[in-house]
Amino acid sequence: MRTTFLIICLFLVQGMTYAQDSLVATKNKVVSITPLSGKIKEVNGLAVGLGGSLMDNNRYDQKINGFNLELNPLGLVIWMFYDPSKPRNDSSLLTVNGLNISSAGYGREVTHNGVSVSLYNYSKKVSGISVSGLMNYMDKGNGVFISMMGNNVDVLKGMSISAFNSSEKMEGLQIGGFNGADEIKGVQIGIINKSKKGKGLQIGLWNKNAKRSLPVINF
Image (tube, rainbow, N blue to C red):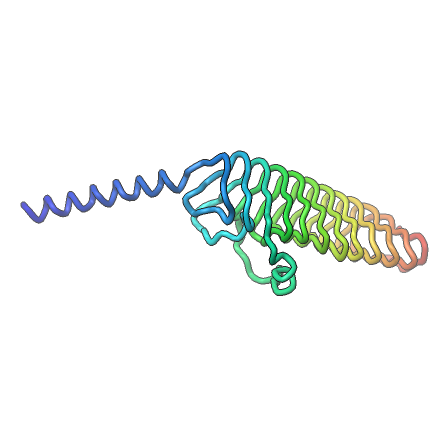
């Protein structure tokens, strides 16, 4: 009888502890420091710090709604050693809705809806505008993407402007020195334009699609 009573008490305590942890883990804040604590589910207002995408928390999606300011002094170092093509989580661990200004950039497990101005942007999906000093690298992009070195957007719907633009599937406009797309539905304007299939207009010094290769204009 005494043993049964102790077992019941242990289950009750465990249940209360789990409920408390769950309650804390879904905490909402107006202002928060980044990287976000695993106890924070959502920030509605201002997130400031080293970066919201640096968290190590695989339990659920975290969200920042409002203004995300990342003051990371190691932005260039991270960019030099980070490999955006490495295996990653299939789902987003962080979603940012609003304005992002960063001296570094996102990791690959981030979804952004809004405007982002950063040194680089490695995201899962971006809907809006992303302006990067170095490059944009993402699975899906809906909107306008501008960078100095390159835009690598697997599925692009919108406009990509950079020295090098690359997409597996592109619907919209690519403008740059080199533009490449496996499947195109839109326009490429650059020095060299390449596409493997689809329908589009190419304007540049040399243009190549599945049908022909021509200088100046190809379709």
